Image (cartoon, rainbow, N blue to C red; front, top):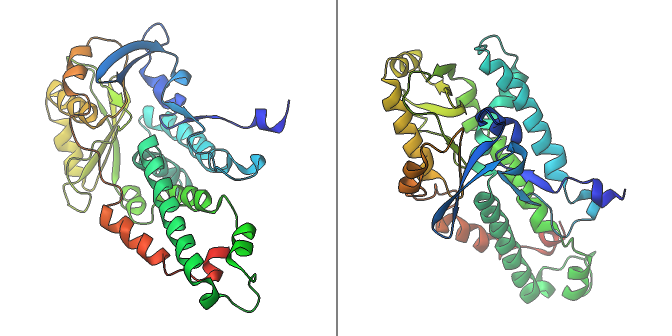
Length: 315
């Protein structure tokens, strides 16, 4: 088997170990997918949904390095999160090491940044930024060329790394998940599991599964993540918030969170059965996408890139 065949091409943004918690008695999860405005229902093995081929591939890199983000970042992240989820399911949310806690935090944050729309946006941002730098350098190469730089722009461009923009984009994806602002906030929150067995409706999940009703800077802030048809993982800034959530009517809470996660979804909603299909059809993708980079931020970065020097270009 050649090296290229050994590299992982199936990149899950909703990992199979996570979706495995939502299977029905037959061992399959019910995939509700938005296709050309209609919800299509299929039974899927958890490994056969929630992925995109070569999602994290570094285009332009040598084949042996093209799957670096998947092999060296996403896969280890998911392996650690799978171990963490087993402990969470058992109700063990105390006395974790810093590394164990960090693995779960990164997994939770990952849902915000590893899905196809986010990856495409980040890659486009860096492609535009590098193109702006290339165009600026071509116009001003003679002015900015250093004594050790190639004599012409064409020579400099020929020596450049064709994968540079993609490498920077995949590094950014990893940095966003290793978030030095959001990460410590979730790390320091109180963690617990909420049981929803008394709800009339089962818990759904989606390709946007993070429920965050208020900004995390607020003292009453919390995050919910579905972890089974009857359970949520909760992280809250204050213990009384968890207590208050536990006192809510289970059916009301599940319906509220299901509504939000289906409205946030862009392509996939998953459940253990098809009993909520009409509900999903009614609410699918009704909320706008959470803005990752504003147009102003992207333009500012592109404008800055247009002032690049020859040294910047070569790097």
